[in-house]
Amino acid sequence: MGGLETTLGGAREQFPETVWSSAVAQADPAALDRFLADYWRPIYKFIRTAGKASIEDAKDLTQEFFRYLIEGGLLARYRQEKGRFRSFLKGVLRNFLSQARRDAHAQKRGGGQAVVSLDVEGLETERFLADRERLSPEEIFDRQWASDVLNESLAELRRALPAEGRLECLKVYEAYELGGGQPTYGEIARTFGLTEHQVKGHLDQARARLEEIVRGRLARGVSSPGELADEMNELFSG
Image (cartoon, rainbow, N blue to C red; front, side, top):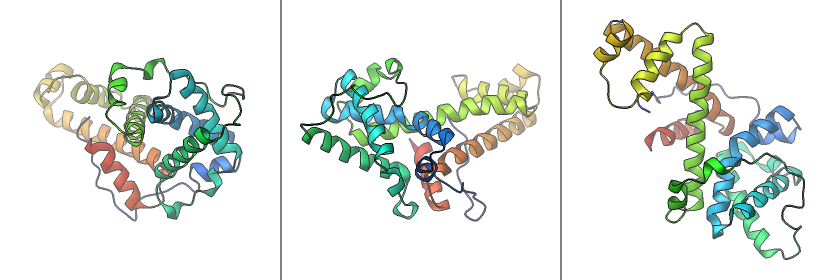
């Protein structure tokens, strides 16, 4: 996906009062549901890659990890000044897997109550199976995280623009950015009966709205404009 501006102004960035750790630690059900939805796929893939866990073992360990993370109060230990939440989470995950391998008396896998619904069929692609042979668990985690952020942000864009009376902006954006090939402004203009200037205006609006959506998602796991800029740059440099 091209054309997204990622030059961020420091003072104008707004951050939520709480990040995932504090929101979940305060037993906010909505925050917990959102946290689980945002992170179960990267966590599952990390576990599948680390130690070459089977699908069923990875599913069980993913459930165990969420219980370990939430019930053990580990989320409350995260401090924003220590760095990005995503980095913190990967470190905790590494420690959890090391402990799980050492602990011969651990609860039998699958014996606990499920924390999150895991539909992993769509994750077990040929590309993933190839990637896990050559990439680290951390790299696999970051790739899935980036894919999820982009896909969910685009889904939100598709809801937001029509609701805001800007359906034409969405249609132009999808045709230009997501339609495949490399259409010109002139080709898009002829398709929708617009001028090239109007095409550019619609694209600018859609890209700005998408950037706003992405920034909002990323801001939940960072503590400063600098970290947010780093996350944005990493997300769109791949």
